[in-house]
Length: 256
Image 1 (cartoon, helix red, strand yellow):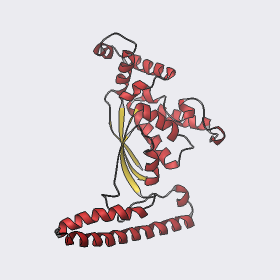
Image 2 (tube, helix red, strand yellow):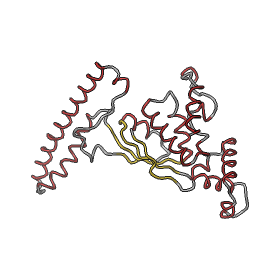
Image 3 (spheres, one colour):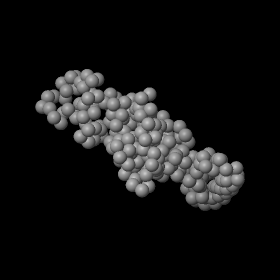
Image 4 (tube, one colour):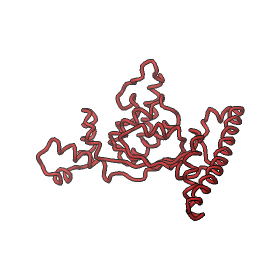
């Protein structure tokens, strides 16, 4: 798994503080912005967090490149709707010899790993066979319609991928570019940094938070799973029961 911060709104903390101060001031925007020191910015962000004024966080966006995750993980990621996503297509990109993700629990059991690899190998072989059969079928159809061989093959391969992908597993590796505003990131971290989240997307979320902290430490000092961000666990009987350990983990992350 690889997570990289590709881009972010310049001077994110200063922008948030400027937008927030504007709500309570008759001064012009440039004057508000120029009057902000680092201490004033951090103090204002702390105040915003204490009163739950998160709308001003929407002015700041972060864009991440995520690679080496499974389709099972990306399906969870795109459920976070206030965001923008661009993902490697299984329709336009051929998946012959596709990379796949193996869950750690399966890696730890030799017999399970052997069975897992066997099934993946069978799917890979079947996928490649389907692509060839469907490509040949469509080439024949397109050449009969008068297309030259090169054009027919190009068009046929896309149609073949489109249908052959139906047998690809959730384990299939994918790549995705994600853009979220800070308010959406807060929500994402509350849900996905939690121990109750699936292991893979939790690892992605934790790394995204670590990268955000490098750029905007004051803003994201208030981010994390619910037990960290809100001081309480909303999971009830389904709680992991490790609030102390979780808080220590994120405190250490934010101290770096």
